[in-house]
Image (tube, rainbow, N blue to C red; front, top):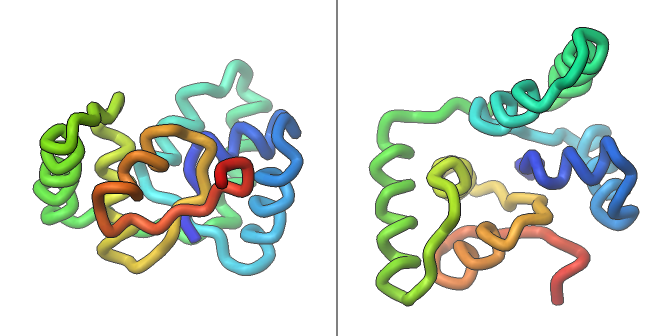
Length: 131
């Protein structure tokens, strides 16, 4: 499963136990990330120690490559949602979703954009806090 930055943040802050537990399990069972997720997390590091800790933690996850077609597919996902009256807040989420769909991986998240994307596209998601 791809662990989105929103789930990593819940894990790091221990702010959502259900998601934090799933991240912990994913780290044992083969968590995956994309370059976009790595970028988002590393950009949020406030100290060099926090940056180093994040790099080590993310090093435990498999990095799924973003392929050229993922960019066009991300734009299509965005447009599909717009045609259904929903605006996704960030194209980064669409890019992560496109990569997840291509790789056949669900996205563990705590982000309404992924919930919306899953309603109108082939994206599979995991969020224990949403019904």
